[in-house]
Structure formats: C-alpha cells, structure tokens
Image (cartoon, rainbow, N blue to C red; front, side, top):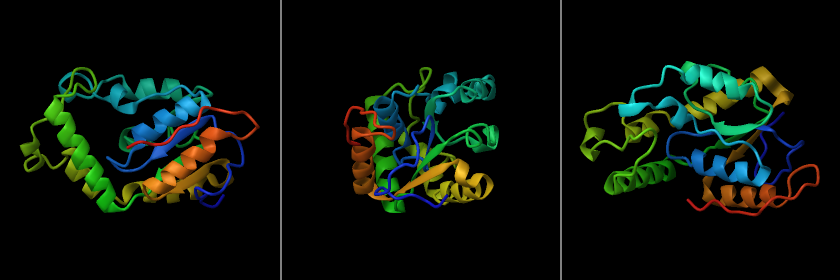
Length: 202
C-alpha cells in the first residue's frame, strides 16, 4: 500500500494504531486525540518504560507484549531496539509525523524547557534533569531528537516492504497537515461512525 497523505481517506477503520516520529514531533498529543476520536484504549510507552529515577522497568517488554496482543489500542512507535516488531507487526495504521527538523527542534526545546521550569512530574515521579545536562548527556532528549531525525522514516520504509497492504501509513508534514487530517478523521471515521471533532493544539 502506498503512503497516504492527509487528503486521502483511510481504506478501513483502524483498531491498532502507532504514531511514529522522533522525540518532540507530537506523538503523544496525536495518540491522545486519536484515542478519544476513535474510542481506542490509550497506552503511553514512556509510562511503561521509565521507572523511578529513570531506571527502565524490568516488566516493560512483557507489559507491551500483553497489550499488543489485544484487539484495540493506540500508542507511540518507539523503543524499537527493545520491542522489535511487537507493535509494528500488529498495527493496522501508522501515522508518521515527518516534520521538518527545525519544527521538531523548536517543539522539543520548548517542551523540555517548560517541563524543567515547572518541575513537571512525568512518569513514576521523574522530572526533567537540569538543562545543563544537554551539554553532558549524549542521550539527552534534545540531542536525541536531532540525532534520530531520519530513524522513523527508515522504519516506515522497512515496514511497508515487510507488510505491504496489511498496514496503512499516513505521512503528515507540518502542523497544518496534522490539523487538517485530524479534523477529517475525527469528524467521520470509516464505516460511517461519527466521533468527536478536535484539532491538534501543540
């Protein structure tokens, strides 16, 4: 199946949805919106992965395998080194946020600074580390977003080669395309069912 744009209708109603993109692309916001619009169970991978003091939870892979075996869910496509195809092998829709690098970097920097300034509690009591760690930690989220910009596209290409017509992939570039696509699919989903409207705010 070729890549779909924001203009094209979905061939079928999705039930297992992955949102792809590098850190700061807006995966969590979009996944939350789609869960509400399509009444899908929402699973946040970061909440399953990060334990206290940012230590990875030992049950992470088992937890993901358990919900991935279910018939309906929406989550982010990440942690592929640990999860392999546990999610991508079951998804019937991948929404690829293929934003320009400058947009992603603006978003991830603004988000990181706001979280640190507010001391926002994230997953299992964790907060963003001091901003100076961007200079010392090679895996700091800002440096990670810059370094992994091409990764989601490479995974999408590989997925289409492996699964072909078994999975839909929608490619969205920039906030305008995301807002337009969300408006279309949240107003009317395939199969004639209606869902609540909504626009991506971030």
